[in-house]
View 1 (cartoon, helix red, strand yellow):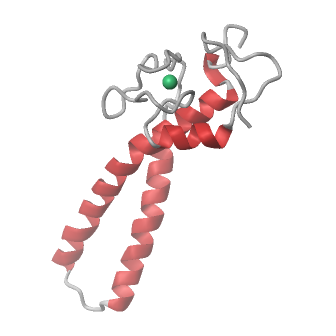
View 2 (spheres, rainbow, N blue to C red; view 1 turned 135 degrees about the vertical axis):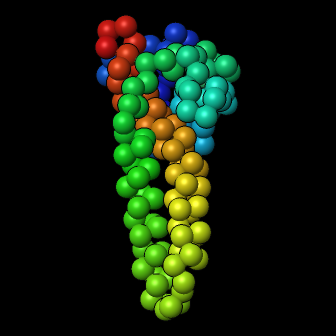
Length: 137
Ligand SMILES: [Zn+2]
């Protein structure tokens, strides 16, 4: 369900934004409002406003949630892989483990962190949190 939102980004009372669309757009690093403008101006720095539609994005307060979810997902994926590899390739030397797992953790975390932050900003925008709903919020 998509609703019309004023040019100023104000959310009329009683309207709802499409949460899953906003979450997906944020995950892809795009503005949750239009899906065109870039959400980030740097690796984890959110643009103050969308360069395409002007939607105010400075209201976001992702705080510690993106690292929390990144660690949660990365630890479960890598932990399962460690157990799987240890089960299938018994006797794999420790130096091989020492080379594989830290690199995988760093790579997966670096890839997931901005996507999860974008998704959370999109979610906050869709729910009208922290001023995303307009001046009456
Ligand atoms: Zn936009």
